[in-house]
Length: 169
Image (cartoon, rainbow, N blue to C red; front, top):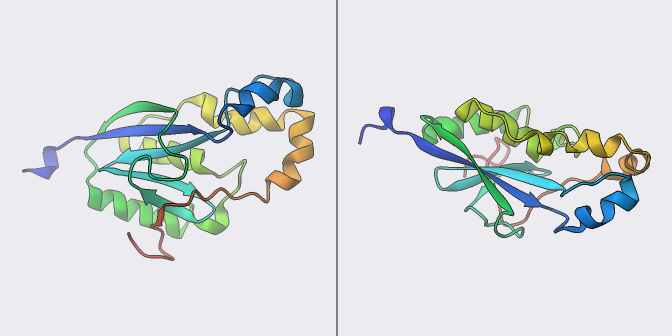
């Protein structure tokens, strides 16, 4: 098969880390409705790729403790082969998306998914996901919790690190 002309499907897996609690508690705690606390991952070439406190990692789709995604967005198709993708992700893992650069509000799984989605398809992920940190931080409660939340690094177990520190998967 000529891989030069092959298109590969790109999906965004969306998980609500709060499992519905954000929808119930956010009006009282933040004074505004949040539908979820979003974790996202890019699914391509039969793997789910995401960023967290361990750096860039992968697993089979739905293979972390989060289970199956709450929703899936079809981002389109790409001609980027698995080899090119792995080189790109390894480069990101050695620089921009190393474990040390993880910041819950500014540099997280959603900024990673957004960047990778644009690399693969030219499309951004939905803004309700990327705008969530600024929505939370625009509230007094969000500002009060920020020092604590800045120390949180989300690293879903069940994944394989793929950044330069650990080598490719």
